[in-house]
Length: 92
Image (cartoon, rainbow, N blue to C red; front, side):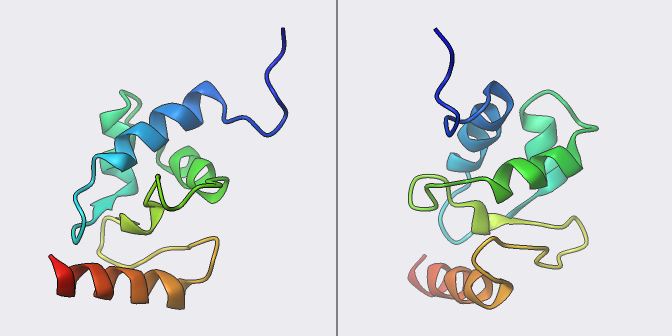
């Protein structure tokens, strides 16, 4: 039995599981996610996995930023990422 072509890879599933643990109103770096999944050198791969996230409600990838505090990319646009983070910080 093969995986559905749109199903997340095992690597993506590990990334998504780590990101689901980021509390609302907080952020973590791509490097933090890479360390959480036991692969500290996979920072760029974490970004690519998050780019493929099809369920931002369950996997809040907007909470992942660069280590220097800059926002980085976001599949739905950096403006939306900034708004989501601001909204969460107001509610937390």
